[in-house]
Image 1 (cartoon, rainbow, N blue to C red):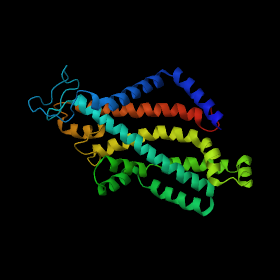
Image 2: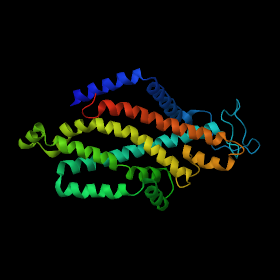
Image 3: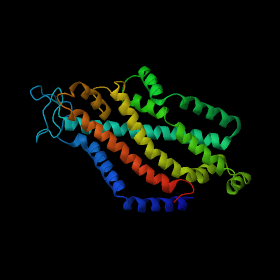
Image 4: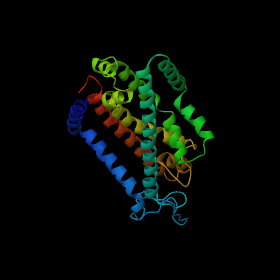
Length: 282
């Protein structure tokens, strides 16, 4: 199974290098992630105010200008990206762990366990995600951890379905049946046989999961129920820019463009991985 995954990753790598848009997307993501990580090391203060220089245009001193209370907007965007990407990655990790665990249990156990877990998935998925997350987030304490937990907890259903479907197919194969027949434990079967087989699906879902989490956080923050001061995210910057559109439209354009480019880039890479890593492809 590991050799199959390696071969598929190599094929995806070749396709990636031949796709100029995918290369540009990867370079963009790399730049954004690096700048977000090193933001605290740069001589920038995202919260320092200067009422004498409010809503200034871009200049050598302030690359993206200043906001309504004189804060450097380039610094605000860097720190906002740091928060948005952190939410995306951590929420994805949480949803992936939940989805893989529940999907693996449902697919392997089958019967009543599978029926109960899948009905739970159906119920949660029947509720529009934005309404569900919005209502739940209202009752949570506003903060970075709360947003990550809320998004991660309500975005595991799709990967659970995918993993369940693959496991239900895999467990009927002879080598899995034989492993159980000779007394190999369930944990070892999952670790040595099932998990490597579903890893391509997990990788693809994780990539698109980051984009989905960033989009969800941006929507919540734009509505004013996501990230709160003193923290900021790209969605929060969009929310704050609403009151200054007539004076500085760039305050909305910059975070908006970054959100779109980031989501597009993750989805672009995810599409390449999906084509080459999905079962039966590559």
